[in-house]
Image (tube, rainbow, N blue to C red; front, top):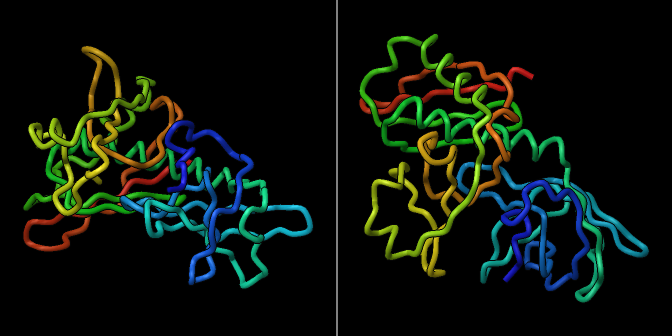
Length: 239
């Protein structure tokens, strides 16, 4: 199993590690990593690995067998041997924009309180697909509500819930198509706001900013019809 350092500290930009394995596809598996693996609509991180006598740019990170995370080189190169100590460095600007967008999508699910049937994140924008027959009537009101939540600078924290407790509280799960990963005994919850100021609590394994104020101003993008019961809503970072 690869230790997912990004869960404990999503702001960690670099760290040393040891090469634990290579994948048949040419990926590098470390014993611990700051690279988020593609999942939940969030792209895998890019960056670089360096070691004595070599280095390689990393195009993305993906999930591999046995709860491992494989770092995928940007081009075919000689990989560091198993047991090599390496320094891993994130493309931080790209990751941080993913964190801002991901957190903003949580806010979008608050402003539009409908079941979510899909989603995707890039460094420029994000979108959620909602199970709703009609688009929101007032675009300006949706955008204003989003930016109000951003301006309140609410804290984002995490809690953990047991698999059984989550099954007993299905209302915590907003996504229709993808269930949170279970089977390890507990599931991570992301909380936005505290006490009476709490606005959201849902399972999520992605990376998020520490406060909503870090997201910056949001702009509502296209609202598209993607089926009789599906509306796709996009949001953009203004910077």
